[in-house]
Image (cartoon, rainbow, N blue to C red; front, side, top):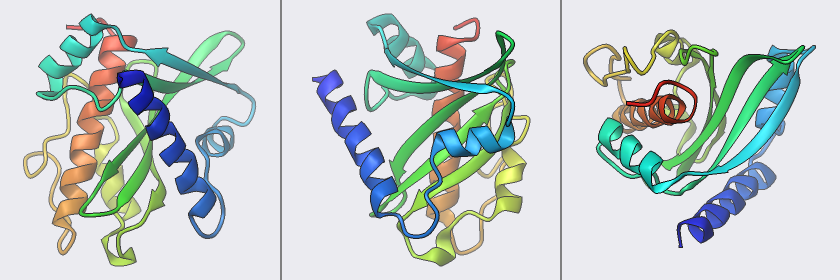
Length: 178
């Protein structure tokens, strides 16, 4: 059932890119722009029950799906970055974010790939920069170390939760776990 939900979630992800107006910002394109001489490898992983349990311990909630796609950026066999796409609902409509993490698990960049709420609620790039350097050891905490966005509280809360989920995924899959 979790794998089926993951496949449906992946289809929703690709549907977002097909219908999102303007330039198509795919994770691969963004990562190639950031790391022009590197290769981007996409790995589809199925979380084990133990990994799901660890993620729940870190976030307080089980992942939506056990199927996870990870973008691994490599150059000369060395990992330069990890990319995770998190799709979630902000208020009533979806948002897709690309998180670029360093090999040490620190957030380097958050890119909005798709946003279907009204445009005035899109998280500003300057605000997204506040997440840079956040890690599983120093996670983003909404209204503690990440301020609210005036007039876009639901967006601020959704991005903060999303960042926490991605950092937990990285820790369980590539870090030392818990």
